[in-house]
Image 1 (cartoon, rainbow, N blue to C red):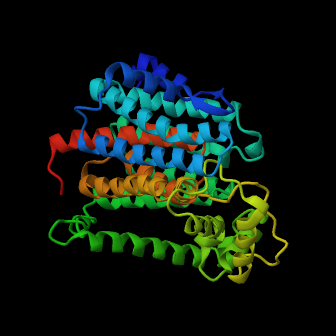
Image 2 (tube, helix red, strand yellow):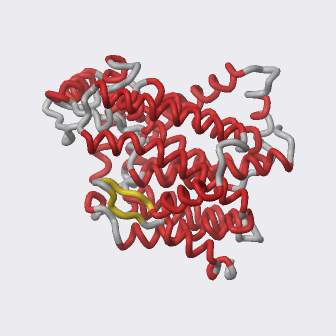
Length: 411
């Protein structure tokens, strides 16, 4: 690790984690460097199947977004930002995959630099919105990334005790800082990792084998999602558990678990509005940065949340002018219709299938990264930070998968 801290890839990672303003939006230096590298070294011709499919689905998304902006007469600056998102995303991923393919020895140092660079950026340059809780605003994720990169690629002893002490510390700090998804996704990811390394998860290979078919695979995914919802609803309904949390978080959690469909929808009522918006315009969507004219969808969201018991009164307010869409998936469905959603469904499918195919050969960094990204696709807004995190993780994950395809046979 000492040598990595003084290497060129490490300093490139530090630089890549910083961003700058561009045409009213933000672009990470890592995205700029990755795209420049792709155009100088990459090619669309000899890439792997997964890279070619990434380009195809990204192209469908971009085409639908352009058509959507034309049909909806989207304001020019909003249209440009919305249409560049899939371009930056896909080309940055391809550029980083190409770099990792050409320079495999530099991969871990670059990931370490990106993680430490994120710690520096989030601590000293936190957005004003998260000024009172920098842990939830990204500092926690950055610190966790440093730990996961170190434990996965630089720690040779792999002490189970120290690993679980660190995980427990991150879990407690996250809960005390109102970072519920951070803490529980970490616990779920590391438990999965531990069970897989102990040989308790070999049966997972049967779920998506060719002999069984795809239905059990997707059914198992839905079942796990439902079980998580049931468990989280029960846990956050417990007075004993709530007594351990900060008082300002308790009222919010109690309100979220009282609704008809449990904790997850209670924490993401925006899905009600974005689903209605998608159903109204499923083919091409409402355009980039879709405006909620006359608060039509916001009012419907409030009314439906009230009917399902998630808000106490119809005076519940929402501060934004855009159609609520607290999800990469739902946001793309609202902005560009079905083509945008298909891109993220493709990513979900690959994340799950690669992880289940090769879980025996994955370090914990990829377990946590895959499940955190899956959560973000379903339940987090797609902003500039989320875009960059998805880019470098997917590039690292896919490049590791391409290496494993040559090294071992899928289970």
